[in-house]
Image (cartoon, rainbow, N blue to C red):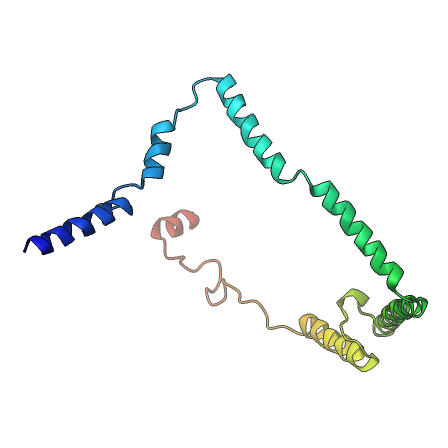
Length: 175
């Protein structure tokens, strides 16, 4: 039995070293709690704030150097490209811009023909843009078409001489 009791004590000792199981705080937290002092003056606040700012600035002190190195790397990569690659990229860029301009002009032309705002048209082909314009016109015509009349709340009440349901009002209005 003494062997079992010795093992239990060893296990209990390990649990205490590892932070315990009874909701105890680890030793590092206890040390920090013991070192904590609330700030009591503006000077002390400024001192602690400047320490924190210095630590943060130290983290990013090499940012400008890294930015410069990245720029040099990009320049070297651009120099590696052949003249053919540069021309091909430029051609692709110009082709995209040309396609966008043609599509914008097509939208404006269809919008002018159909009488709808060009900003509301969608699609990437002439047929799609025309279908979008037709759908927009159909919606606009449905919104402006004949509507059911609004109900009249006085309908069915009869003439002004009929009782309104309020005997005092009816008796006073009769005079």
